[in-house]
Length: 99
Length: 99
Image (cartoon, rainbow over all chains, first blue to last red; front, side, top):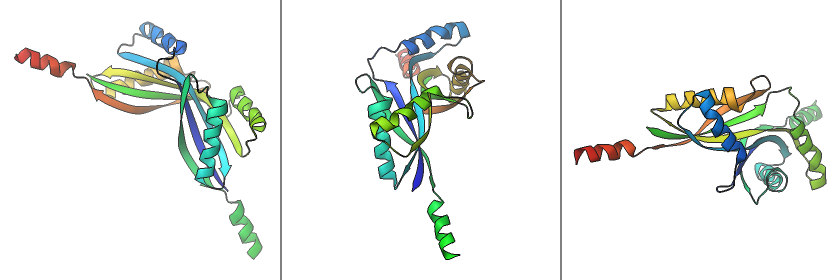
């Protein structure tokens, strides 16, 4: 088993109203910041998946992203692999078996 | 002027309680998904900045991220450059000046 760390980025689809983004744009004047536009506010979910390989891990994340983390009618998502770490469980078991 | 597209990823700092992440973990059983852990829910803000160069653009985004988009006491952020596009305004102006 390998542990994979993923991020799921969920953003409002183009054309969908984004009140949070508008609120950020409305606050820029108070901060004296100019030149910022096109603000879109979404979610970022980071999670770890234990799976046999990268294909199985990504399938789990894709299902989670589509069914739980986003609303496919109004939101788009993309899945980003942050890193992977081989579980040492099997290696340790092997060493113990030889001892 | 160049237009830069950035993403700011805001996540709860390690050790900070994340009720949304716990809620996601609590829903995994209903979906029949196993092997998922360490769920952290944050925000992802995408925005465009018009600036003279990449250094000036990033300075604006860093200020925005620290003062408006995140709460530095409980949240961490990182800034990600998504892309850049040279504005054609100055080129067009130059051509008009020569005509």
